[in-house]
Length: 508
Image (cartoon, rainbow, N blue to C red; front, side):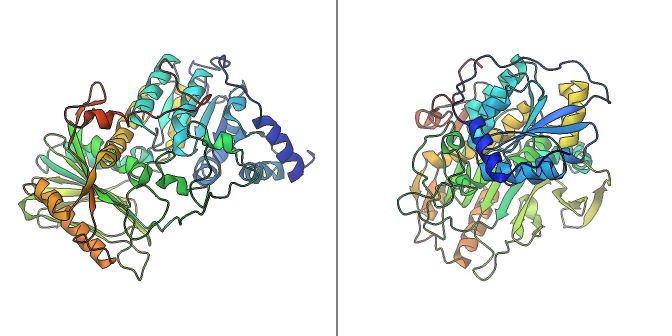
């Protein structure tokens, strides 16, 4: 029987594994590139273990699959690394542990990595893994900016790697059935896609001096491509979502799932010709930088996408979120009730003769006529898992079998970045100035009015508080760059400054 490792010894050994590793330039090459037998064991490494990593990439997926073995774990927070490793040791299972992903990628036994790191690490870990001959499942948003998303696509192609974007809604067969119905034209032409993420987010506080980095965290590795500065918030973990150097706000956090559904339903294979965002960070004064309330219009033709974010509750006496309610063309009243106690996010596709609410409730999706009568229900009891799809495709080596390729993931994530860039280039404006921009667009005016009502209930009067109003940004979809007015300012946000040696090179 294997002797159990003490916590002190484990932390000491793990720290050695993560310190002093130089930039790898000659990773071991391809482990296997041919179709595998169903009896072959696939060796997985999970990178990033704190929240989504352990329950979505370990406990509820790979650890329950036949023919799959988790042989390595990686996280620069040694307390978290220890927590997960001890579970393996208690089961008398061997697992290698790493603080530094570069050391992990030297392990020739690892076939693929499944990553749930903070956003600023998604692209670099994927590119490095492709160079090391590993396949990848990468969390949403697949990238921290548009440029590095394209580099991920290039790396997957150059090194003949399977890279799956973990936008798991595509793995649900009931969603495929509903979107096929929308695209069949039975409800007429698509008019607009309404999508939203209403999720309760509280203040992250305001740090005095710098926040506390636990001693068991290798902060250099945690920062990676981002500047290594005194912690600019109270808590190291999770609250990075709301600071630009590390996260992408709520539109980048949960938005990729729903914007992917929108783009899929609309049949759009590129970026929109133009985009505009308005909003702000309301209700608290903290170290957060990203908006907690925003509306973004993606001006696809012939049908646009309107995407909304809310972080404040339905009212100050609850943490529950508002239902989604809107009035669309032809006077159609559309609505979606909250799906959970503190969140509500989904997508509704409005057509000439009705709409389809793509929010899956108890495994079902419903279609409605113009009067709001349910006319069709889509239901499929078949279980779906993006992880099982990933493993299946690792055996077949067929990229076309991936439910969400890295290209699809890149395009849907790029939509999130476009919305954020319009906001970042924007300037403070009055609510009247916002209304003037959209006075001829009924759906956006409706979104503005319900946003104003929502903020009023939470004690924020837009007549007294300014709104950040982004400009219309025009996009060259083929080149993935901005053109025309404000393009010089906007193009600066397509790529970040990388910190050596954590750099994605122009030639991957």
